[in-house]
Length: 185
Image (cartoon, rainbow, N blue to C red; front, side, top):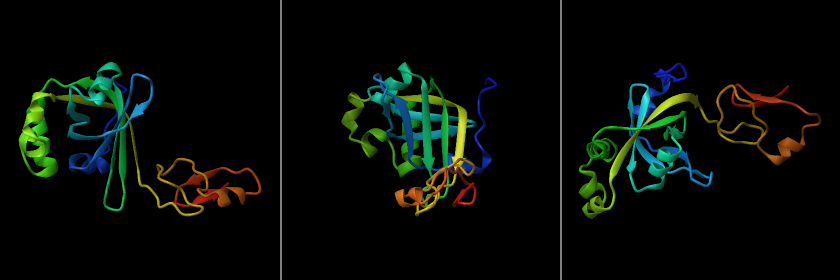
Protein backbone atom coordinates (compact mmCIF):
# COMPACT_ATOMS: atom_id res chain seq x y z
CA UNK A 1 0.00 0.00 0.00
CA UNK A 2 1.21 3.49 -0.72
CA UNK A 3 1.33 6.49 1.62
CA UNK A 4 -2.00 7.86 0.35
CA UNK A 5 -3.99 4.81 1.46
CA UNK A 6 -6.43 5.71 4.23
CA UNK A 7 -7.21 3.52 7.23
CA UNK A 8 -10.83 2.66 7.98
CA UNK A 9 -11.75 4.02 11.45
CA UNK A 10 -12.32 1.39 14.14
CA UNK A 11 -15.45 3.19 15.37
CA UNK A 12 -17.21 2.58 12.05
CA UNK A 13 -15.94 -0.88 11.06
CA UNK A 14 -19.17 -2.46 12.32
CA UNK A 15 -21.06 -0.58 9.57
CA UNK A 16 -18.80 -2.19 6.98
CA UNK A 17 -19.02 -5.65 8.55
CA UNK A 18 -22.83 -5.73 8.74
CA UNK A 19 -25.05 -6.60 5.76
CA UNK A 20 -26.14 -2.99 5.17
CA UNK A 21 -27.04 -1.55 1.77
CA UNK A 22 -24.34 0.66 0.27
CA UNK A 23 -24.43 3.24 -2.50
CA UNK A 24 -21.54 3.12 -4.96
CA UNK A 25 -20.95 6.29 -6.97
CA UNK A 26 -19.05 5.98 -10.26
CA UNK A 27 -18.61 8.17 -13.34
CA UNK A 28 -20.49 7.34 -16.54
CA UNK A 29 -18.70 7.84 -19.88
CA UNK A 30 -20.39 11.23 -20.38
CA UNK A 31 -19.25 12.49 -16.95
CA UNK A 32 -22.56 12.09 -15.15
CA UNK A 33 -22.62 10.19 -11.88
CA UNK A 34 -24.23 6.80 -11.32
CA UNK A 35 -25.13 5.73 -7.75
CA UNK A 36 -26.61 2.21 -7.55
CA UNK A 37 -26.95 0.10 -4.43
CA UNK A 38 -24.28 -2.64 -4.25
CA UNK A 39 -23.24 -5.62 -2.17
CA UNK A 40 -19.80 -5.28 -0.55
CA UNK A 41 -17.60 -6.80 2.13
CA UNK A 42 -14.53 -5.65 4.03
CA UNK A 43 -11.06 -7.14 3.63
CA UNK A 44 -8.88 -5.42 6.26
CA UNK A 45 -8.73 -1.75 5.14
CA UNK A 46 -10.05 -2.44 1.64
CA UNK A 47 -13.64 -2.94 0.47
CA UNK A 48 -14.61 -5.57 -2.08
CA UNK A 49 -17.53 -4.87 -4.41
CA UNK A 50 -19.66 -7.38 -6.28
CA UNK A 51 -21.45 -6.69 -9.56
CA UNK A 52 -21.95 -8.20 -13.01
CA UNK A 53 -19.60 -7.73 -15.98
CA UNK A 54 -22.54 -6.51 -18.07
CA UNK A 55 -23.68 -3.76 -15.66
CA UNK A 56 -22.81 -0.06 -16.11
CA UNK A 57 -21.01 0.10 -12.78
CA UNK A 58 -18.53 -2.60 -13.88
CA UNK A 59 -17.87 -0.78 -17.16
CA UNK A 60 -17.53 2.51 -15.28
CA UNK A 61 -15.04 1.03 -12.79
CA UNK A 62 -12.91 -0.49 -15.54
CA UNK A 63 -12.84 2.71 -17.61
CA UNK A 64 -12.55 5.18 -14.72
CA UNK A 65 -11.16 3.28 -11.70
CA UNK A 66 -12.28 5.56 -8.89
CA UNK A 67 -15.41 5.41 -6.79
CA UNK A 68 -17.12 6.37 -3.55
CA UNK A 69 -19.00 3.93 -1.31
CA UNK A 70 -21.51 5.30 1.22
CA UNK A 71 -22.93 3.15 4.02
CA UNK A 72 -25.61 4.63 6.29
CA UNK A 73 -26.70 3.02 9.54
CA UNK A 74 -30.44 2.36 9.16
CA UNK A 75 -31.45 2.34 12.83
CA UNK A 76 -32.31 6.01 13.20
CA UNK A 77 -29.57 6.98 10.73
CA UNK A 78 -27.16 7.52 13.60
CA UNK A 79 -23.87 7.00 11.78
CA UNK A 80 -22.46 6.82 8.27
CA UNK A 81 -19.16 6.21 6.50
CA UNK A 82 -18.09 7.39 3.07
CA UNK A 83 -15.05 5.72 1.50
CA UNK A 84 -13.46 7.30 -1.58
CA UNK A 85 -10.69 5.59 -3.47
CA UNK A 86 -9.13 3.80 -6.38
CA UNK A 87 -10.69 0.63 -7.74
CA UNK A 88 -8.79 -2.46 -8.89
CA UNK A 89 -10.18 -5.60 -10.53
CA UNK A 90 -10.25 -8.42 -7.95
CA UNK A 91 -8.76 -11.75 -8.94
CA UNK A 92 -11.09 -14.02 -7.01
CA UNK A 93 -13.90 -16.45 -7.67
CA UNK A 94 -16.57 -13.76 -8.12
CA UNK A 95 -19.42 -16.30 -8.29
CA UNK A 96 -18.37 -17.85 -4.95
CA UNK A 97 -18.03 -14.35 -3.46
CA UNK A 98 -21.55 -13.52 -4.66
CA UNK A 99 -22.95 -16.73 -3.13
CA UNK A 100 -21.27 -15.88 0.20
CA UNK A 101 -22.73 -12.37 0.09
CA UNK A 102 -26.19 -13.80 -0.63
CA UNK A 103 -25.92 -15.91 2.54
CA UNK A 104 -24.63 -12.95 4.60
CA UNK A 105 -27.07 -10.36 3.28
CA UNK A 106 -30.32 -12.30 2.78
CA UNK A 107 -29.69 -15.73 4.26
CA UNK A 108 -29.87 -17.88 1.12
CA UNK A 109 -27.66 -19.31 -1.60
CA UNK A 110 -26.82 -19.77 -4.44
CA UNK A 111 -27.26 -16.30 -5.89
CA UNK A 112 -28.37 -17.68 -9.27
CA UNK A 113 -31.41 -19.76 -8.41
CA UNK A 114 -32.20 -18.61 -4.86
CA UNK A 115 -31.85 -14.81 -5.15
CA UNK A 116 -32.45 -14.24 -8.86
CA UNK A 117 -33.78 -16.65 -11.49
CA UNK A 118 -31.21 -19.34 -12.35
CA UNK A 119 -31.45 -18.58 -16.09
CA UNK A 120 -29.82 -15.17 -15.50
CA UNK A 121 -26.52 -17.03 -15.01
CA UNK A 122 -26.46 -17.39 -18.81
CA UNK A 123 -26.44 -13.64 -19.42
CA UNK A 124 -24.97 -12.13 -16.22
CA UNK A 125 -21.39 -12.87 -15.18
CA UNK A 126 -20.21 -11.97 -11.64
CA UNK A 127 -17.12 -9.84 -11.16
CA UNK A 128 -15.53 -8.26 -8.11
CA UNK A 129 -13.52 -5.08 -7.54
CA UNK A 130 -11.29 -3.89 -4.70
CA UNK A 131 -11.80 -0.32 -3.42
CA UNK A 132 -8.54 0.99 -1.94
CA UNK A 133 -9.46 3.94 0.33
CA UNK A 134 -7.76 7.29 -0.15
CA UNK A 135 -10.25 9.38 1.81
CA UNK A 136 -12.63 8.28 4.56
CA UNK A 137 -15.33 10.58 5.96
CA UNK A 138 -17.55 9.59 8.87
CA UNK A 139 -20.31 11.32 10.71
CA UNK A 140 -23.59 11.43 12.48
CA UNK A 141 -26.45 13.00 10.52
CA UNK A 142 -28.59 15.47 12.37
CA UNK A 143 -32.33 15.91 12.08
CA UNK A 144 -33.24 18.79 9.82
CA UNK A 145 -35.30 21.42 11.59
CA UNK A 146 -35.41 25.18 11.03
CA UNK A 147 -32.04 26.58 12.01
CA UNK A 148 -30.42 23.14 12.28
CA UNK A 149 -27.79 21.43 10.19
CA UNK A 150 -28.43 18.67 7.71
CA UNK A 151 -26.31 15.50 7.58
CA UNK A 152 -22.73 16.69 7.79
CA UNK A 153 -19.50 15.65 9.49
CA UNK A 154 -19.21 17.10 12.99
CA UNK A 155 -16.73 19.84 12.10
CA UNK A 156 -17.95 20.94 8.68
CA UNK A 157 -19.54 24.35 8.13
CA UNK A 158 -23.27 24.60 7.63
CA UNK A 159 -25.89 27.24 7.10
CA UNK A 160 -29.45 27.49 8.43
CA UNK A 161 -31.61 25.05 6.50
CA UNK A 162 -34.79 27.03 5.86
CA UNK A 163 -35.26 30.12 3.65
CA UNK A 164 -36.82 32.02 6.58
CA UNK A 165 -33.84 31.24 8.79
CA UNK A 166 -31.45 32.37 6.04
CA UNK A 167 -33.37 35.65 5.47
CA UNK A 168 -33.45 36.44 9.19
CA UNK A 169 -29.71 36.96 9.31
CA UNK A 170 -29.10 40.70 9.38
CA UNK A 171 -25.40 40.50 8.64
CA UNK A 172 -23.14 38.08 6.79
CA UNK A 173 -22.14 35.31 9.13
CA UNK A 174 -20.44 31.98 9.06
CA UNK A 175 -21.93 29.01 10.82
CA UNK A 176 -20.48 25.82 12.19
CA UNK A 177 -22.01 22.56 13.24
CA UNK A 178 -20.37 21.33 16.39
CA UNK A 179 -23.30 20.54 18.63
CA UNK A 180 -26.01 19.79 16.09
CA UNK A 181 -27.23 23.39 16.02
CA UNK A 182 -26.05 26.12 13.69
CA UNK A 183 -24.49 28.96 15.62
CA UNK A 184 -23.66 32.28 13.97
CA UNK A 185 -20.19 33.71 14.34
